Amino acid sequence: MGEDEQLVVSAMAINVTVPEALRWNDTRRGQVFRLDTLNVRMLPDGRLAAKAYGRPVEGGRGAYVSFTVPDRPELVTLIAAAADRAAERWAGHRGLQ
Image (cartoon, rainbow, N blue to C red):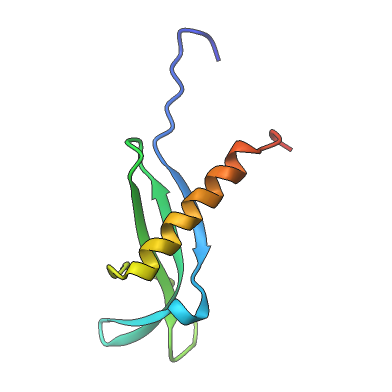
């Protein structure tokens, strides 16, 4: 990359497994989903955005569907801790393998 070129990073994302004790169920189109994963993005302005993902409780090959993360203090804490941990790992990268 030359000096005249600006490197643009539009967002960074991490996937976080929700600990069993913090998982929850939500319903979409009459189907109950168990939410077990968060996708957390750091936006260009430094704010975090998160979506929860899960699978149908009834099993099967249902879609992996996204949901809004509820405003629960323990989930906010989990997201902040995950972002901090990701920052540590990014800072320690060892280059492209």
